[in-house]
Amino acid sequence: KTPVANHFRELKEDAAKHGVLFRFGATVLAGYPSWGQFFEAVSKQPITELQIVVNATSNNILTMMLDKGMTFAQGIEEAKRLRIAESDPSGDIDGDDPRKKLATLANVLLGGNLKPADIPTVGIREVTLEQLKAADQAGRWIQLLGRAWFENSQVKAEVKPVTTDNPFFVQMRGTSMGLFFKTPAADFGIRLDLGSGDRAIMATAAGVFEDIL
Image (cartoon, rainbow, N blue to C red; front, top):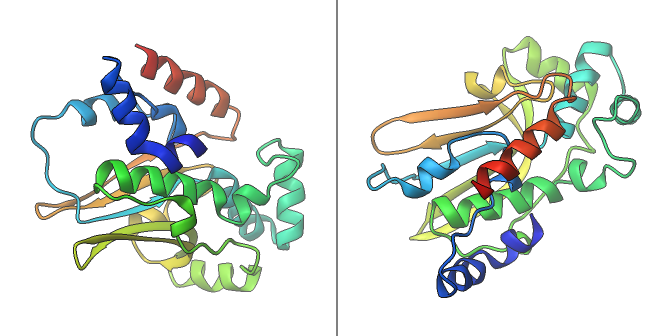
């Protein structure tokens, strides 16, 4: 993720210079098969705004907090026990992972020129069980949401916990991830569900093979 997030344009230009294709679908939503089709699409609706939930670890911790009545610290320990979270989950829960993915997507899909350091980011450490319960009872959900949009013809982006009433994200819990697009014609989303998390390795492998093929 890090090289693509920081140097997408240079890598793309270098690949073109050497007459090869540059593929990196395994870095974001690995296992989703439509990256290739998107890159090769001759005509597509311009994306005006992108919203993403792409960190399964954070989403799963928040879900376990609500479902099992855990504190944030307990949610982290349970995610580690289930091998959903790494031994040091700070890159996920503090938002560095979704920030890198958002920089990549904003540059590829919206034509931005962002680096992860350009994106204001807040993680989920301050999200409480009480906030999750209140959101759930109101038919909403709290997600570590990445958002990229146009402002004065420039691409802006941010990552932070958001209480959303968008049904696409409200129903996205556990290890589910997804992208939500706004276009002049319609709004639509794509979703990836890793189940209990045991399919994450398979999804990454599938993304690598997709890029190679």
